[in-house]
Length: 483
Image (cartoon, rainbow, N blue to C red; front, top):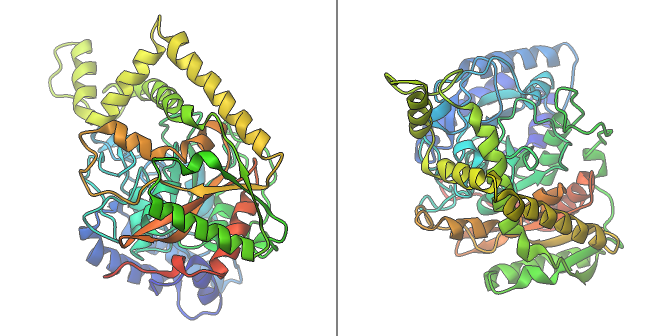
């Protein structure tokens, strides 16, 4: 049963080939057996999962149906889950049990999903390798010596290893799409505001967006359907009707205008990945797409702009973790200042401390105009580049990452090298655009992804293109050895 996709599970449950309870027990046993070598989960929720599975079976027995009713998933451990530890991968929140459910968690629970647990992640979503977690690094199931990508590496590794069919994730600068590329999954970052951020512990509020990680575009469509929608609790949520994403999967790609930015194929891109991207372009051409070279001239400025804006927002968002109201508190503080200093120094890891310091510096008097304000101006230029491009093309295609997954620890001494791996993904976050990564082949036995970007609220178009591509290729069906 563990090889079934969400869509296959929905059909199996509808046809009464198995129950949600049977499926849940099988996957919990598989997690217990295999996850010790991956470290993809922070918390398992066996009792909750079994009670939700029994409830889903009862709902189906009474005549109710739904693609997610009885489907097992997991949540990235920054979505608040009532009464369950929500740690954000940090010592700071190791003892925090959320008093309420995030909107995404509540919506999926109402749709009948079964929560198997909370997945590992880079601390406060800061990282591209899932090595900054307080609970230890996550391993890539395709090669246990390599990273699975971050910050949603726990969700990605668990789905790739067939521990469960799909999981929630978040993307601030590529944290859904990059792990998807590194683990041979399909991952979708929706338009900013499409999925509620209420109850999603913030890293950078103007960049964070929740989305699905699954093996196929069809499964991403099913999970996004349950996640998306307006939320009055979230001031950044956009009141835009949610289309039927599954209904648009089978549309023809005849005449689809695909833009390929010349800036994507510079010196930093592994030539083997470039070749696989060209192969993907040829597949889309066979399906009727029309390819056009375009330019995104301000892409070169995106990384420095992002690594000013994101840490600046992080320094503000993380100021609430002070050892007073919740989270880690140091032992025997001498006074209030000592409480703040030691609680934060002990509770936050090195990467989080680094980004808080960078952000505080960029926002400080005398440096705000020179750094933060300038970064926001660059952000607007990046958005303008995309708006101009989408006047000419329907989607933009390119590599998700410049390199395949690197070895664990390989970039720990050089944070800048790790930041540069986000070069293709962060522009979508700066502009608030939807982006998708789908499997496109392998380099040295490690998966490679191709990225698709679309205009605002065109997630259905991305899913349609990815689904048609996956009907004509088999990269997404490959399974890591041993799993």
